[in-house]
Length: 371
Image 1 (spheres, rainbow, N blue to C red):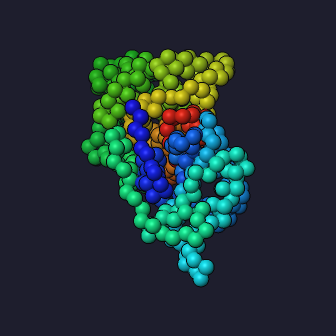
Image 2 (image 1 turned 180 degrees about the vertical axis):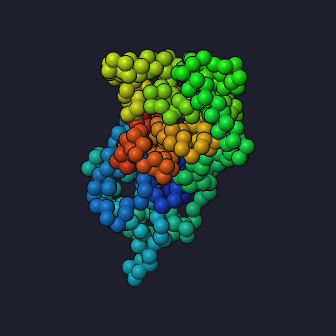
Image 3 (image 1 turned 90 degrees about the horizontal axis):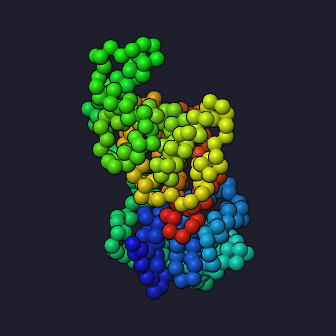
């Protein structure tokens, strides 16, 4: 279902921006790609720092907008640190040089400027006015399925709460699972093993089915299911199967598992269509499926012993990036870096996020909100 919100002027449009973004931006520049009279999502960028070149920043930002299918216009909304300054010549809006560069880059790219606005604590004003004045900001409209957008771009990034009892149960489950796996390498089972641990290991005999079942109850996993998932996410071969499957389907997981095992055994390369998913190429994933998977790994990270958190946190970073939430991805990568600064996939993702790269599907209509 699509929720359509209409704005008759700049004030009403500003009230809609948080709905399009999914949050209320702070310390940000938001670019809204337009196709005709409609805005398709919102792209949030951090404010440029003092050392950044305005022209380079603008060219990169507008370059992202031009990748949206069919885009012909752009609106610019700035949420600065500081309010405007009043001089003898009138009101001076913050980041005026950067906005001028954005407008120039958009014009060079053949994009019309729908609006260029500044939102401060005291109200809003337009960069397009010769003599700008602050006006009251309209509240965000209420509409079905919009949800709460009052938080900023980091809203929802905190891991779910896990009490000490949950963490202890998962820790014990991990010990039981590891004991059985180790015993299996060195001799037969004794019959005294924890039956729940044996059941958890049995689930791992069909990994794609296990990864699929996790999506059925993403926020209420038994301790042994969480332990089995943590064991998988600590092993790149199986972690990659999970992420690829969640971004495609069960068949994609089966194919990826087969390809990963073939690569480990014979060095045969993973097919391009599967490898491309990690770089954001290929068909657009089902965003609801990605969100379910994100809930699964966030819960696992909250329950995991510290040394095993990089696995689910890196998975959370990739899933956030796949959903167009680079701000959230960067947060999870910071958490990984504090535990394991040399984590392989985390280093790769950090390079991607730091360069402002987004998955190709983020630029397709209806694909989500790049942030």
